[in-house]
Length: 160
Image 1 (tube, rainbow, N blue to C red):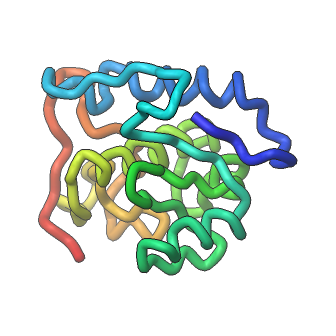
Image 2 (tube, rainbow, N blue to C red; image 1 turned 180 degrees about the vertical axis):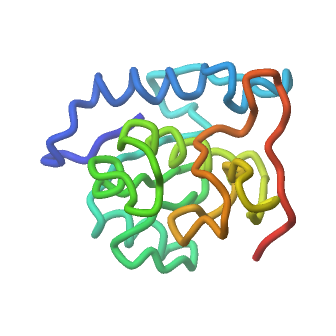
């Protein structure tokens, strides 16, 4: 877990929140094959970095992605979390910024795990975490988690 200097985000608080998201019963570890643990050295295979929009754009551009100062990405072993999204959430996500943080972490970690984008499974249904919810919900309901509390994976049709 890294936080860009001067961002105003408390690195310890952010690390605690990210750990909570990754350990949540509705998170990726629910599949029984995925586990996350914090390390304090360069052996990490996944680094979650909260960075200014400018830094996020630079990190993502190195992997051919245009984040336009607005969105997040997975860039190699780094999940680049746009500071603006971390602080403000998204105008299209119906929930508080803290819940949107869970969506950002889960969506980008999902890419790190090899999951592609999904579409809305139907009007009024929960959006899959791998849906690009920042671009619109297409009739779905905002959702920040890959699994329901009962362990059901929230899926949808493949999307570009």
